[in-house]
Image (cartoon, rainbow, N blue to C red):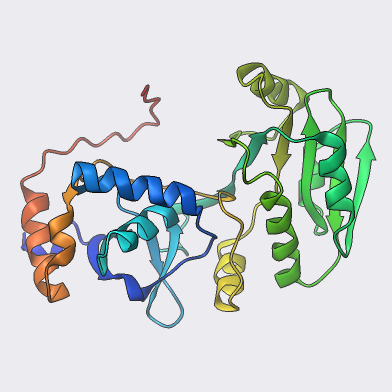
Amino acid sequence: MSTSSFYPDLQIVPLTSIKLQEYVQKQRARGLATLMKKEGVLRHPPIVTKSFNGSYLHLDGANRITAVSILGYHSCLVQEVDYSDPKQVRLTSWSHLTTVDKKKFLHAISRYPNVQVHRQTNFDHRVLLRPDILCVAVFADEDVYEVRCKTNFADFVKEMGEIVDLYEDSRVERVFSESPWTPKSIRIRFDRYPEHNVLMMFPTFSPQQVMTITDRGVLMPAGLTRHVVYRRKLNVNLPLTYLSITPTEEANRKLQKFLQKRVVRLYEEPIIYFE
C-alpha cells in the first residue's frame, strides 16, 4: 500500500481552500487556539466535503479551523467525506438547551420582521416538518411556542441566526434525540440540566440546502447542523508543526508516514464513551 493512499480521506489542505458553512463562536475558537498551542497538536480533524467549484466546504469543526488560523498557520488537517453519500455522512440538527428571560426572549423574537410567535397547548414533533417553522421553544414550565417565518430561504436562515444570537452569551448544551422529541424525552433533558429553562428545536436541512445557502454567501447559525460521520477519525493528534510544511504535497507525504505509525481502533458498533 502506498503512503499516498494509506488514509486518503485525511489531508492537509490550505485554509484558503476551505469555506465555512456556519458562524464561528469566536470566544470558543480563541480558547481552542490557546489549548492547541499548549498541547502542540490538532486532536480531531475538521470534516469537509468537496464543493461545487473544487474547493472544500466545512461541515464540522469551524472553531478548530479558526483556531488553527489564529495560531498563524496557513494549512489545516481535514477529513474529507462525500456529502452526497448517506453511508459516509448524515445531516441532522442539534437542539439547544439554555437559559433565557422568557418574557424578554419572546418579545425580542416577536419584533423580528416576517416572524410570528404562536403559543401552543402541547408539543408535536411533526410541526418541525412545516416549511415555515424557524424553531420551537419548549420551556421547563411546559409552555410551547412555535416560531414561524414566511420569506425566502436566505432570509429564513438569517432570521434563525438572529434567534440563536439572543442567547449566545448564555451557556448552551447541544442535545439531540435519535427518535422524535416527545414531552417525556424533553422532560428528561430538563431533569438532567435543571439550571436551564428552555429547549430550542430546529428543523433539519438537507445537504443540498446547506451547500446552496453557503454558495449564496449566507452562513448557518453556529451549532445547528449536526453531521454524523461514519468512521470519523478522532485523536489523530497531529503535531502542529506539520501544518507549516510546504509545499502541500510534501506535507501530505509526511502526514501519511505519520499516520502509518499510529495504532488505531475501529468500532463498527455504536459506542458510549464516558469522558
